[in-house]
Amino acid sequence: MENPISGLGFLSPVWLFTVLSFPKRPSHQLTPGRQDMSQAIGNTALAYARVWHHVDANERVLGKLAERIALALMGKHKPIYDPGVDCGDYVIVTNARKIKVSGKKEEQLVYRRHTMFPGGLKEIKYKDMMSKKPDEIIRQAVSGMLPKNRLRDRRLERLRIFEDEDMGVFQKNILKRWEDGTLR
Image (tube, rainbow, N blue to C red; front, side, top):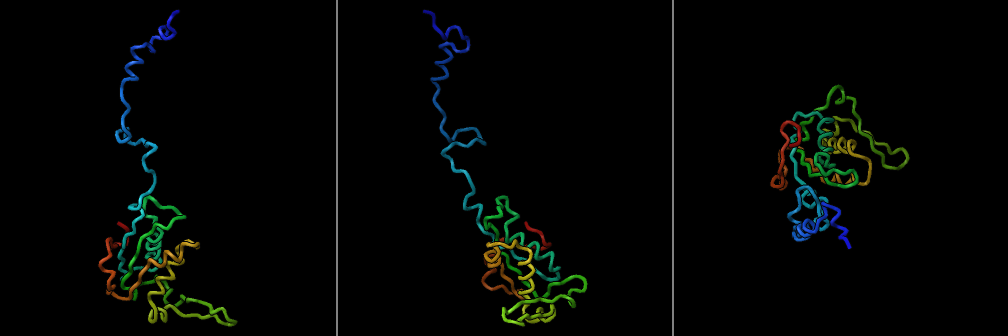
């Protein structure tokens, strides 16, 4: 009887012996970029860690500032961003009293809310709101920039707004500052 493998030159018994005699490499020595089944795949807790940002609203335009704050609250500046996952950061805003609006909005802007009783529509002008609750102006602007879904309230809870420079105990939490309005 003739050996069936001898007709195939590349499958000689010597070649089979050399291939089968080498031990398999452990999973930690695999080629970089390849994943073994035993390795963890996915985002870690470190990727979802929340950072505290400080924003000085002194002489800043309300709409542009609110847009940047909304992006940080949603986590769109992170590479792991997912619309259905709340992966945003904390934002602390100081000097809310010194914010600016463009054009004639200072005279024309009106904030409305309803008490849910008949005839319960309440209107307050921008100037009155600025003197009573300047933090509410920024909060409503950021709320309008966030997606209207279940995560909106949770994201707004991570927004802290102060009327002046003093931010109390939150000073120790800050890791990033925005001097020119950009995230770093």
